Length: 316
Image (tube, rainbow, N blue to C red; front, side):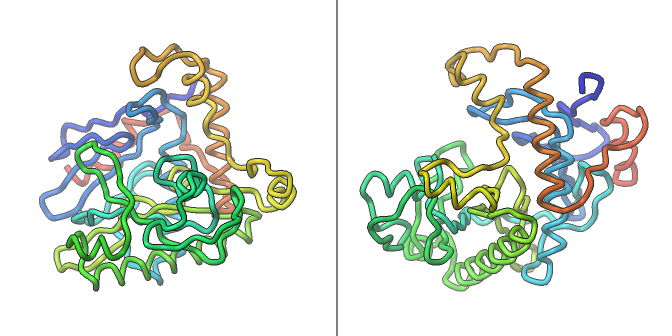
């Protein structure tokens, strides 16, 4: 694994209108297309803390699997895949609401239903949750728990459908469309995941509008970074014992860093190669389990950024 060159950045001067995201390099072409290059950066604690070999390829190709499996449900931004780490899509105006769909009472963030439920709250996101639910328990049906999308680096805030429409974040028609798409996408995802021995517990979607105002799915779908997957076989016993469900544990690096410093205010210590390699293997395993496909690393010794530049030359 030490000989593999992770993609730390993919800055290609020949491409116009560069924007650096947390893990993706973005380029906007004059004709309304956007090039998104997934690097191997691992973002945590509000910064990139490491590079995980093949992470960008895993996320791009997992999303590709799901975009293709759900294209009959909802239009998406994808136009083509010129490289294993690259998607070319339509540039969209991203809607200011992040759509999170949950099938289970789970989560650790301040906006997760489990966190708020354990604080004693029962009316959440415009939904009344019953008493007596346990950590990681299946909900009676999938629910949407939308949040405001913090474009300026602020914090996401919980929203109800009435708040979304009342504050004109979305029109009623837009809300009806995205909520319908989201529940249908999640149902498809749960069904396919079940066939792979997995539980898709929750996920998030981003939607945008094209130049004609048509709502389309953007960004990624059902990847290990945007979704919570559990292993179905061990879930019943673990739930009965009150244990955390078995999942793709990608947090080796995050946990190692958090145990050794204040990652929000102190320098990040040098991360051992072994942890980087472990995390890379977890991402590859996730891709293969979710999609049922063998992971294929790019052949040859060409540096990955040189390969990406070569594959994108026709866009210069």
